[in-house]
Image (cartoon, rainbow, N blue to C red):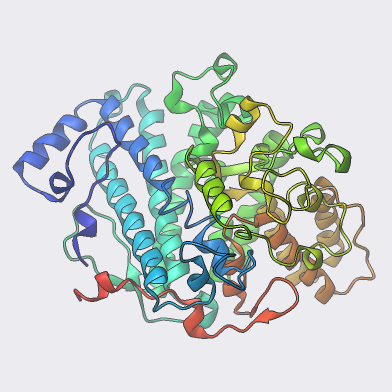
Length: 497
């Protein structure tokens, strides 16, 4: 590969030029020795990884409400006025266009930058004695668990975009799985090998973070005030802010949830179900649903909490996202309008994902846009501040979806219906699913619910890709071919091979 693996991205306050990052020299080694000479420097390097994960190139836009949602056809796409900034070309799967190639390049390079940073941190931290860290073994395990988990996550995102889905039984070359820094000549691996490496890293993170998050950080994780915010920090009994915001950092609950997603994508629904149940049980005991008083109703839709932060296993945060989206909406009258919501929510027009997040009449820029990214009238400034910068990566509802799909696969329809109804009730849907529904009908309901739940969160495309089915989000299917499913590896990468 090219120079991507030589780039170690540190937090913004380390004022170092780009050339310094590319220089693996004696001076660079001295710089790194200085950074890693104190546990506070390690913490700053870790924070820098999260800063890059939340950038517009990754979860700040491309892997959530931008590129990934456009190719999943969550948005109306019948003209450039509906999908600006090159998203129209992406939604048409015109991978040869300059705009689509630009998206691919930014995702590819930034993801491998993050991977390089994770590898550099891992290599330094594993050599440190536990006495080096402010909180000893717990802090060392937490940092290593987070970095292994993030390394796995980044490779998984790249694999889902740039490689055929496992359902296609692809055994050829996929992407490099990079585990050291610097790696001047990383080797491409086969698709099965990449999936195995992704699972190995995430399982390692699972082991390292288990005690960290269920014992050491227990109070932080049982309080929403410390899982996504630092308000009332005294309630969490945390040593300092580095141990807060656990929902905004790779954590034990997120690792179980992500393993469930990874195994489901692989086609291993047994292991997917096992990990989903673990995450589901913690959701039942510690996290639960966003309370009814915060969900609102048809008569109080202005006070809905779009991010439903109580339910987030993992999210990142970027304060610039709201302004970025609002600038798009101001410049393009029809942009980012959701697609065929009347079909998607047919029979469930009391579902508050429809009444509050889509069909709200008091939105600043009009209806037909999902309210997740909008400043909604009636909210106080603190409410806007608390929730809108969040960038959801995985939430509790996906654990319900995975279990429901597994139960339907095993012909355990009664259990699937019971679990499905509990999820639907939490979202305000009044109509109950009944035993006389066929498995085919239930699968269609599940498909629609996954789309409803992850609108603007970038998961629709990958659901259909995992199943190798034409994308359907409304009145007509979007005919898919093998070429459409796989984003080509950027030319800047392949040109040097």
